[in-house]
Length: 193
Image (cartoon, rainbow, N blue to C red; front, side, top):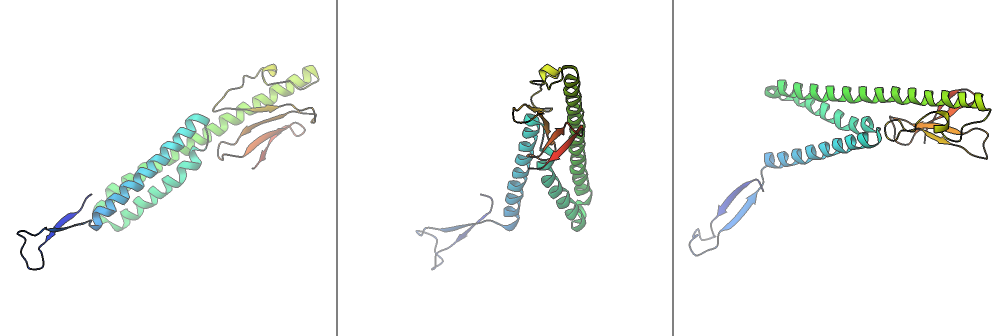
């Protein structure tokens, strides 16, 4: 435990033969450093968890990373304003967090574009199969689309109770929202959870 240790003599000012009374006091700067270290560790753990989710399922990274990034940017900008000797360092740290945030947002936008293009190709293949065979395909493989697990996952369900199947994909920005293809309007429709 970081802190200073003080020795107080006994009441009669004689420390010989008496047990010393020792106190350990933690100073405010040491406590602040401890809290900062803990908060920083929690923020990094959250960032790594968000990255792991992105690598496993290809989504939610922006949603989980944004609060961490905004807190760090605000923290460094406010420290830059009030702590004159640290201005250059804090400006650099805020710039790094801003660049990381913009890169992660760009990755999410790229992923959204790629997922949408993949889903449109699948819808086009299902429509071509329907025009050629006068029926919807039993699965995407019959329409010539290989289902990919992970980043570009598509959902395709056939049902006896519905005349057309359900074709959809998860939203790259939010965890529970989906886009499903409307075969009458020939476009994807957003369905929030």
